[in-house]
Length: 425
Image (tube, rainbow, N blue to C red; front, side, top):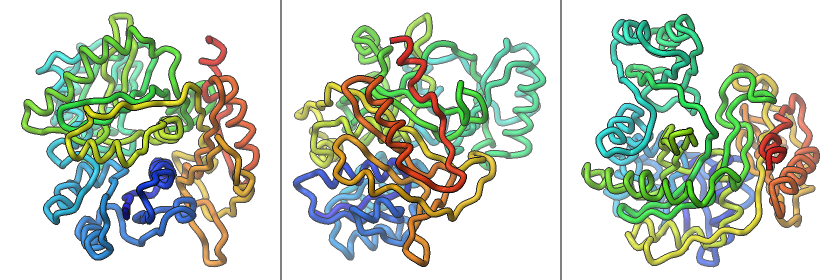
């Protein structure tokens, strides 16, 4: 079969690598793709938000199945466009992707259906938000309602910081139209865990847990990024927590969306906080996490096409997800200065070291081929270096060893991905 993947990052490279392992697939296209994806798929120069062009390409090339990797096209309604064209596509429709597209919607959904989450208020008037903050407990969390590349969340320790945050989100529009509405949320404490799931509208199956590292610098210092590294599984996601979440969070979310007339098919990413009162939902995403996909998918035993087709066909209850009994760590190699300002266009060397090495992966994120055919840096997050191991300690050692195989000018990475967890366990 022929498969089209929509997107251009490390997540899409991880998806493409899984699709390439399927015995059912003989041709992969990716739009627009990147230099690494281009080694296993034919990259097509169509942007992820060019829905009509993508659908026309899929028809012209007799694509059997399209996988949408990114949040923007999902929230924008690409699945609706493909389905109206009679094309088979993996991902939620627009009215279901609102689960990620609007934080206010998701918070209201959780409140209505009794899904554990932090207390909150929503605002579309900055003056009303400022008045509310005068009586609120600090620290407090401000969230731009819409999509903001994973960066539209501000943790404010003082009233002054919170007031500045309102100005930043709602008046200065630092995150664009995403800040037209804002959620003000109580600050929760505990360990964060990411749990990805496949959903077919009624059935949900949980993938292996993971944990992201959002801050730019070691010791969780610096600005929030799209993610500087991750590991899977989380040792804190115990059988007891899994049982609680299956009863009070996962299935209830799927049922709530169906009850609202918004049946969800695709991937739901649950961002959880393990608080003293029990697990609570921090956020939902309507697609694979990036870089969580880079540690979860390499550990999945199933044929990814079988699972994704079961989601679109409503037959997920007939499959059992299986994962390897091991661990994986991903270290993001970024351009120094990310997420603020950084230079691009530096040649990347050393990737050939990964060839033929089982359990090691070099997922491309911000790369491209230049006029001379060299692979060069083309973004803030450049590569995701993933390695597996028998346990977290071995996987972490393998990932950091592999990170040294790669060279490019202004290469930057955190050196403590998974370190605190390894020390605790």
